Length: 297
Image 1 (cartoon, rainbow, N blue to C red):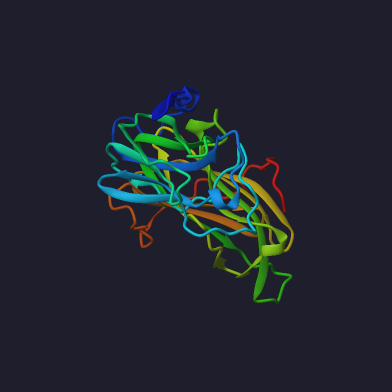
Image 2: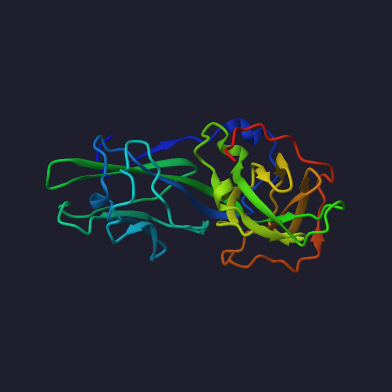
C-alpha cells in the first residue's frame, strides 16, 4: 500500500438482515479500535518516543503519546498493538487527519493526510523513514458509521446470598463489538482487562470501573458485550442488545452475579448518559448466551 493511503473494507451485509431501525435516525460516529506496528525492524525503547494523533471537527485526539525513554519496556515488534489512549466514539465527524510525529532526531518529519471516511471498517497506514534508514510503519483501525447511536455501558457485580463480605476481587476481560463487523474480529473495544496479578476490589451491587464505557453502534446492527470475568468464580457469556435512538436502557445478566446495563443516546453531545431515563426495556431477563471465546485469566 502506498504511503498516506487508506484501505477500505465493506461492512458485512449479513448483519443487515435483521434491521432494527430503517431510515437515517442516528448520527455519524467514528470509533478507533487499535494502533498496530507494521515495521520490519523492532522498535527499541529509545525509538518508542513519539506520538500518533488524529484531528477531526477541528479537535485533536492523541492515540499514542510517549515522551520519555523507559529502558524497562520490551521492544515493539511487527504486529504488536501500541498502548492506545482512551478515545471514545466521536460524533458527527468530518474529514480525518492522521499525524505521526517523532520527538527524537531519528525521524525526518511528520506525515499528515486527510480523508472523508465512509461506512465500514477503515484501515489507515502511516509510514515514516527514519534517519538511520529504517521504515517505521503503523496501521490505525477505525469503524465508520453514518447512521449510529452511542451505547453507555455499565457492568455491575450482584451480591451472592452465600457471602457476607462487602467486596470481592474481580479480574478478566470485557469486550464490546457490533454485529456489523463480525467479519473482522479486530473491530472491537476492550472495556476492561485485568489479570490475576492486577485484580480490583468491587463492592457488591457496585459498578466495575471500565477503562472505556461508551461505544458507537450502527442502528442496523446489534451490540455484543462479551464477558469473561472471575468474581467469586468464573462468569462467561455474551449479552446482546438491540440499539435504540435515545433514552432507553436495557439490562441482562451473565449468570447469577454479573449484570450488563446499556443506556442509549445518539445526541451529538452524547457525553451525556441519560442515566435518569425512565424508559426501560428488559429485552431478555434470562442469562445471556454463553461466551466461548478464549480469554486469559
